[in-house]
Every structure is written in structure tokens, then in C-alpha cells.
Length: 201
Figure 1 (cartoon, rainbow, N blue to C red):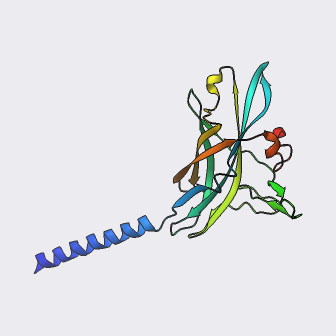
Figure 2: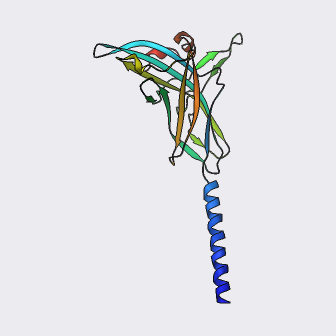
Figure 3: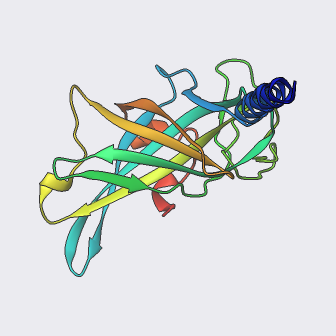
């Protein structure tokens, strides 16, 4: 009888441990990041060249629009959102740069559309990075890459496109990523959304 009770206690402990493990694995944030309208908003463009120690600097801007959803059972805040761009030499990590909220007049309507900037409070949006369970946030992010000397450091451009990896990390250290295909466009077009973007560093 004693052996039977010990075996039953062991089985119950195992079942309890498995239930706790299942609860732990499901009761956590699960962030998913995706580009918003990938054929429209993901742009790369040349910025005016700069100088570093009398050497010309080649500058590139990257504007991305992403949506981030939380499919887990716990709310969580974003800790970082970085962009990784391939050059011929190696992959380069870029950090976001603050920009004013992009805005543009809708053709013929007289109305102005404004877009949120990820993690940044503006006139129209709070820039909240806390994502509750079953909800999502969206925003634009802007990055600048600067290269000098060898052109092997230039971004890899194929058919006018640059491919990047957009990586988010939450407050618990979990990360999620998505591929972004940037399409080349003129800085003049980008300036219709963000005035004087060439002056933002």
C-alpha cells in the first residue's frame, strides 16, 4: 500500500510539473513583426554626401513601416527595434533616429494623413510601446547608414532593392524578426512625407 501511495504521489507531481510548464510556456508574450503594405512604404534613398576627416561620406536613408502584434498571454513592452543591412563586407546594425510624424495630403481630398513613429510620441500619436495580449501597434522607423572609403561598404543593391532584417526585442529579452525589402526612391518623394529629412542625423 505504501509503495502504491508513493507511486501515485510521484505521478501527481509529474502531472503538476507538466501543467506548470505548459502554463509557463503559454503565459508569456509572443511578438510577431511584419511590414505594413510592403509594396508601398518600405523605402531606401540616397542622402546628400557628408564628410569625415576630409573624406566623403556616402549616406543612405531607410524608412520602414511595421506592425507588431502580441499573440501571447502577457503584455510586454518593446526594448529595441534595430535594422540590419547587408554590405559586401558584412552585415551592419542600424539604430532608429527620431523623426517628426510623417504626413501627406491625400490627393484631391484636402485631408492630411499622419503616420505614427514607432516608440515616439508626437502630435497625433502617443508612441506607446506596451503591447497587451491580443493587441498590436504599428509605426514607422527611420535609419541612416553612413559609409566612407571603400565602396565595398555600400549596401548590397539588386534590381534597385535593398534587403534588410528588422529585429525587435522585448523587455524580457525575447526577439522577433522579419525581412524588409526596401525599394529605391528619390529623396524628393520621401520629403513629401518628412520635410527636411536630409537634415536629420
